[in-house]
Length: 432
Image (cartoon, rainbow, N blue to C red):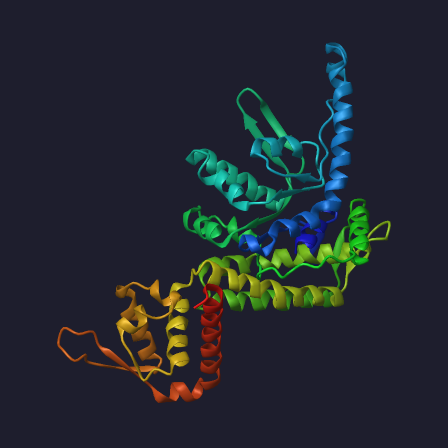
C-alpha cells in the first residue's frame, strides 16, 4: 500500500477517469491516503522510506531546479523582477509542512504531490491541539479539499486572493494504535479519518541481509515512467464489463453500510470506497501501461475485477480490523463477542457479572453497569437463561445453554488454544 500510494501521487492529476458513462461531472484521479497502523516494532518508517525513495529522488531534482531559477530571479533588479514571472515551486513530495507552506507549494504543483508523514499523530494534532477552534476547522477544510482535488481560492487580508489551480495531495504515513484511538475519540467527526485506507500491520519478522530482488529496480523504473504519464485526449472510461463490476461493488457496499452491526465510522469509510475504487483503477491502469507514451483510453472489466478483488479481499478486512479492533468503536458487538468467546473457550456451565469482570483483558474493560445488558443480549439469543441469585440482593446467575458448547465446539477449541498460546508466550517471556 505504501508503494501504491507513492505510485498514485506520481501519476499526474490530468489523468482522470469518468466513473459513470452518463455523468461527465464525476471524475477521479489517482489520489489516495494511506495510514500504516502498528507499534514501533512493525517497521513503519522503513516501509515508508523504501516506498517513497524513488519519488524523493525526482522531487530533489525538482527542488534544486527551482532553487536555481529562484536565485536567478532574486538577482534581477526591481524593474526586471516586476516584468519577469516569479518561479513557482513544482514539487512531487512534501513532508513536515504547515498548511500555509503546503499552499505555497501548490501554487506551482498542479499535478498533485505526496505528503509523507512519518508520524501521522503530528498531522492530526496540528489540526486539533495546536490551532484555535476556527483555525483548526479551516485547516481540516483545506485537507478535505486536498483529498478531492480541484481549484481552491485563498482569501487573506494583506495577501489578497490566491487561486490554487489544483489543491491535490496524496498522503502516506504511520501511526501507533493508541495515538489513532485518541485521534478518533477527540477529533471532529467530519469524515477526515474515513478517507484514509487503514492498514493494520502485523509484528515485524527478523530481517535478512540479502541482495535486493530485481523487482526493486522495476519499481524504481515504474515511478520514473509514471512521472511522465500522459492522459488520452478524452480521458479514461470504463468499458461495459468494468461498469458492471463497479455497479456490483457499489451494491455490496450499500448492503454493508445497511448492516446493523457495522458501526457508523466504518459505514462512512465503506461509503467512500466507490470513489476510491475508481482511483485505484487509475493506478492499476497507469502501472500496467507504464511504457505507453499515452495511456489507453479504456479500463477493461478484467482489470476492474482485479481491483474489486483487492478491495474485497485486502482493503475491507483491514478496515474492519481497524474500526472494530484497533478503535473498538462497535462496543456492543465487540463486548458481546468477547463474553461469548470466554464462555465457549472455558466451557462454562454458568456465568455471572463477576465472572465477566474477572475474565480476560478485553472483558476487564467492561464496567459493571454495562455487563447486565450484555448478558441480557445473550439471553435473547438463547445462549443463556437467567435465574435468581442465592440472595435477594445478589446479581442474577446466567445458566449456559448446553447446545452452545456443541454448536461451537470447534470454535471453542480454537479460542482455548489461542488463549493457552498467549499464556505460554507470557510465561516464556517472563520466565515463569
